[in-house]
Length: 220
Length: 256
Image (cartoon, rainbow over all chains, first blue to last red; front, side, top):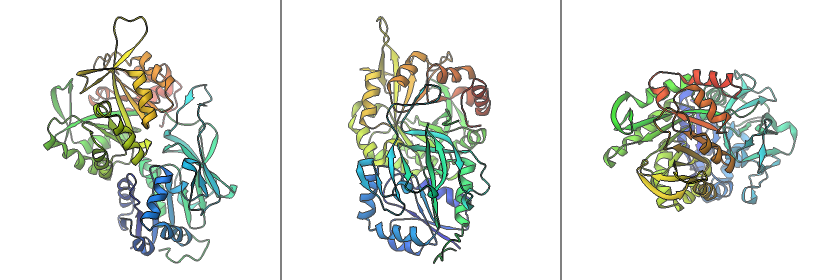
């Protein structure tokens, strides 16, 4: 049986993430945890996130999770969600905070006074259901239609340092990377746990994903 | 194509059940919250809002069980409001599985609560609900904030209040017109538009929806980012899907 650790660093709603995974992968052992040992033992790791980046980084360090997260991102199937995507990059404009530096690139804020194509003001946070254009073929996109809508809520977005990282984009109104993929790592700006059928499919895909690019210690 | 306008059915909950009534009078049992939430999810609702109208604190904890059950079975965002007074209330609702918490009266009594909750859990999960009523007898349009379910005038100018709440860390404003609520005469478009044009955060229009065209007006004329309605969906008059099809027919981007 596959064990999935959902990392708990004390911020926001992890229950909906664990519930959604339990819903699509009833055979998996899902544990919401802030214990680095549990993260290290898990076959798969989900790094969800809500809240502000400086607080999240502080909590990660305070709970001794920093190294465990970096190790997990290196060698086992790893899914980052929202702040869990943003924290993988070098740096965020939010509080000018250094990230985990696992992926090259930075996290930027949507501009103030955004205007859409019809001249209507666009609000920040970018909140609601937007289309996701898949830019690569990937097992986590399997069975999900191109341009399916996912639920977003965020004011910051990633700007990958190398274009090859971008697995999907969305537009608000300019194009931004909303999914990044590399080897055993997949991370999304939207919330699959709140994105109805498309989101559940992505989580189900993650629960059975066996990355092939590298020798992975724990791909179960 | 881009971000879709949201349609949000609102459910009143007390003693563990969804109820419906007019102005808290003649409440009738309308069913199991999880069942109703699933039905709206199936119809394509973009979010759900649960309003805890429980009067006694004994029954209040029931909402936590409901939230847990909804979170385990319905995978779209949902907001819970009603009786939220402290950061600890916010924490309990989020831990039970709510995605956002709506704060109304307590924000007026203690504006710092909005700042504290937003600082702790992020602006994305803090909705400030504003019940606004037109100030009669002035040349200029003005609205006043009411609290305690619309029973108590505060003397606060609604637009100034909305701006202040945005500054303190609200992620979204749920804006209800007291003048229109329950009338089925449509949104207060001037109110909705004044808020939408002024604020940088999203505005949910509420109060007065009687037909599908009202929903479209809220977006096209009121420039709302989302529209909330209760009775037109509860009584089975319209499904959420019909509402979306109507809005799409008016050129509004929706998730179908």
